[in-house]
Image 1: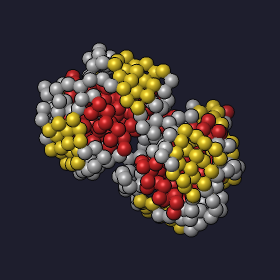
Image 2: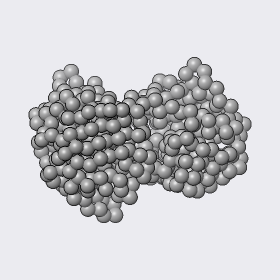
Image 3: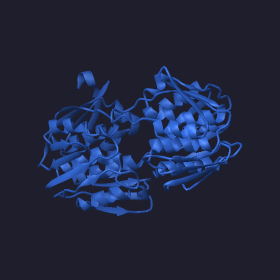
Image 4: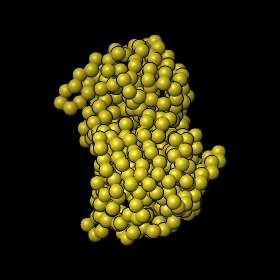
Length: 420
């Protein structure tokens, strides 16, 4: 197992390119199961989660070949309808194969998912939605068993917006008989990207990006080529790094429209931000102003940026309140930031952050993907050396993070944990 060592105190400057979005790539790769043929995906990030879904698709009979940032998938021989525990436990998003398998093969057997320790994140809304489409659902021995000769369109209302639930039911409904309407649907850019791919395949999906998505079922779909959209959370992480270290970072191949909430809050902290068509330049300066944050479903402030912003507030001037409304266990990183001297008090789903002059390097442990990124950011401004263990979480969602930070001038390296 690896660790990352960061020696803080350097302003980060330069230019980096944003990778493709993991959270867009995973459902789009899963959607290849809906039709037999050859698919090509470009701008695919090189991440552990992408490797996991590659293995998952391979177990189902797909041929998956990676060439640079492109992934080629041949789904003509997909016959296996089971997603085994050994793979699904590594990545909660593996549940995204449930809808496509059921729609195409009329049956799916998918292990109940695992993933980051940031809350239960149950899939009950996925299963209730599939049941309304006519699927027969049973839970046995840790697996979801779903069967349907052909799904039938219906109206589905989500109690709360669910990204993977919206994606799963969109994919299931495209081959259903009749019209499906998803109400209170998630609105994330990754949902819109999936809908655009499905429409290229011959589906009839409208309203993606709004709370109401309408899917008119079709008889068949065809393989396509698709490009993965930029990773808005990776871009946001480097934007915070510029503000945090008082440097200037130009982030290219970004999609500024996907980051309006983050841009707005960073400007409130005093950072200077220049937005071009596909590039964002952030310049940080002292003092950093404290701002309050409340995570909300898109287009609100993203929960995946909460931990990174908490680091920024830990060295800001004044008191800020960060409210987490999406996941109940997403303050686990607070204990590690406190080890570095941060003045943070948690009460329920609120964290009161009182800014201090500087953090202090310390050995810390990552608990989930975004917490890992926040600890790297903390190390960049801490006095001394920060050792971050369990960084395999980082490899699930950040492509070459230490290389990109080194390019910007950070003193950062990956080492075997035993020798760190």
